[in-house]
Image 1 (cartoon, helix red, strand yellow):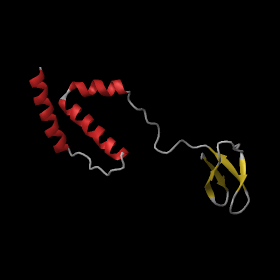
Image 2 (cartoon, one colour; image 1 turned 135 degrees about the vertical axis):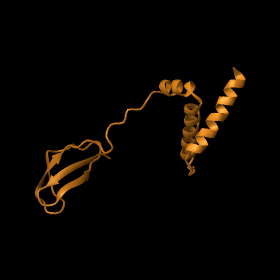
Image 3 (cartoon, one colour; image 1 turned 90 degrees about the vertical axis):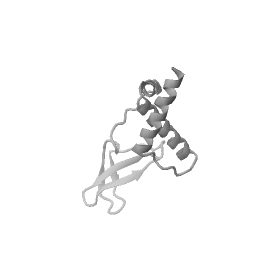
Image 4 (spheres, one colour; image 1 turned 30 degrees about the horizontal axis):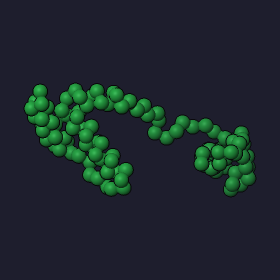
Length: 110
């Protein structure tokens, strides 16, 4: 349900939950004192997040062993989390060890 914020002169900002079908009005009576509260618009919490495309991530992963190790660690972490597990994040030391192994494996193939 969408949350709308209204500002009551007495009680400050209050959150109201609407269904998708409800019309959002300019004012709404305060649930505590019935005084008209004005609808206010705010940016979503956390700001804008611009995700990179799969292709950009894949190209980065091919560049160097460290980036490959980091991408693999994030992928495994997210898969485990999606399955309901509580995985431990890979440490910097673990990433370095994995990067060395990837570099070694890449040199064997080339």
